[in-house]
Image 1 (cartoon, one colour):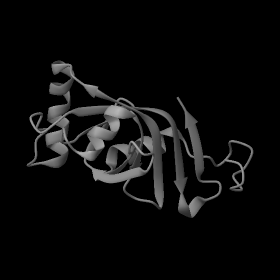
Image 2 (cartoon, rainbow, N blue to C red; image 1 turned 120 degrees about the vertical axis):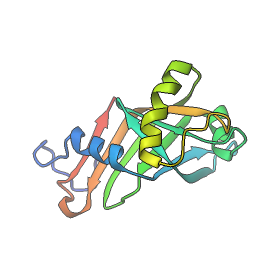
Image 3 (spheres, rainbow, N blue to C red; image 1 turned 180 degrees about the vertical axis):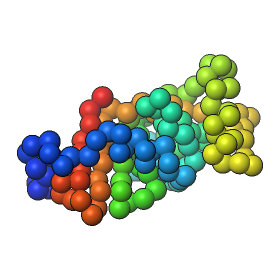
Amino acid sequence: MPGYGVPKSRKGLLPWAWAQQRLTGSHNYWLITVRPNGRPHAMPVWGLWLDAVFYFSTGRQSRKARNLARNPRCVVCTERAHEAVIVEGVAREIKDEGQLARLARPYHAKYRPWKLDLELGPVYAVRPRVAFGMHEKRFPGGAARWRF
């Protein structure tokens, strides 16, 4: 992370397990997509971090869904900026019924009484390409970048 004063050695850098704990434990997430004209679009979403993939749903006609149909690249951020995890990745709509059924139980457990309502719109899987973590109180040592 050039220019931020992060140590050149790996000493003090955040481990990937730290990021996964925050991705799993976050209740709300920020999803940033790109409009057709290139302007960013940010919106809070509910979601799940399972098996190193972020899953969320949205309305079929929502701005998020329309943006992702044109450009699947997006950014997902956890809700707590003082212990931030930022994931850059590519969103793909999940159509496999077995995979969708596998997500229903943990989604309901996390957001009870709400259920994953597949009639409202698509469910997406965001696979990370790169992620960043920053722990405010430990900065600049409490930071990291992970590539996938």
